[in-house]
Length: 188
Image (cartoon, rainbow, N blue to C red):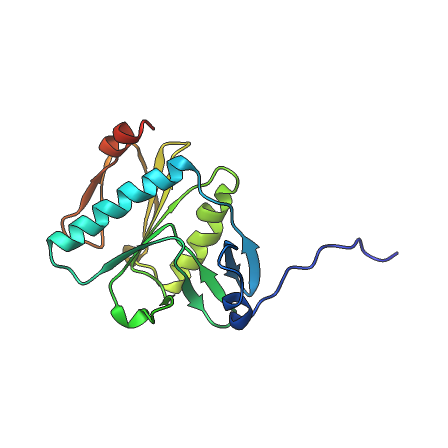
């Protein structure tokens, strides 16, 4: 008896990925393409607040790091091809930027959990970001009102904070983010 037919994953090359229509939101893990959903209103509002805090901090200190938000491609690997679009990222090495994307791991990433696929941020992306060399990765979950801080540079994984917390961004000397203020502002 032949095995049941299973849909085959769509394998993609960099050239094929670059030829996708701009309207298609997708990421690639181990050369397999995965479509992503559009973010919700709370997701976008939270992303904007966090991006602004990071941007203003870096600008006020005349820092050289840059803040980017999705959709902006990050190529973590050529073989197998892995391209992600983190919600928020800080890139401190200008040589990783080629005008189209970041080539290599950003220094700091924040993902905002979407209710439809939380395991993507908690499991898959945690694995890929850690192995690619991301220094720090936060998983911000507005439904559960939890922030999971992963400071890979010091082997600290999954320290959880509530939305009432003030949390240190470990890659910077003196940046603290007050989630209580953000939650109050956004009515989370």
